[in-house]
Image (cartoon, rainbow, N blue to C red; front, side):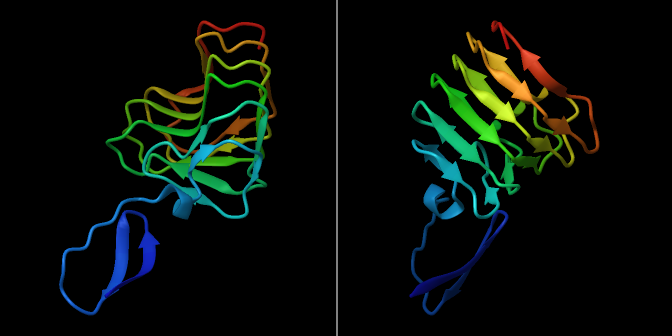
Length: 171
């Protein structure tokens, strides 16, 4: 038998009573990360090797309640803390975003693509941030009429962009 006792970073700790073939994958439901199709209030920190939360419906509120979303823990994968693509009226609030690596080529705490009437409020990005191509909030491809308010970025290697707007208006 094999009993999982802990998941720490990229290390799975298990008690194995006999030898056999064991495999595992990162289970989004176990980490709290994955597709979000209804309102969500965090009750613990979330950890992901790449993108953590992917919005999958309109009219959703993600309230981190001061908890951390730690994403891009694998330095070989593109990471997004929250991916909002093609959905509208999404609120992301009270989150602390962290990324574990400072050598990512591209990294987004909050990514909006073709998303309108959304609110990004009271969020913080902290930690060792990548030296290039880091975007705290990235709006692209027709992400119009969004409210971005009371967000902050702090940490080392502060060479990225706080808010980057591309092909979007009235934000």
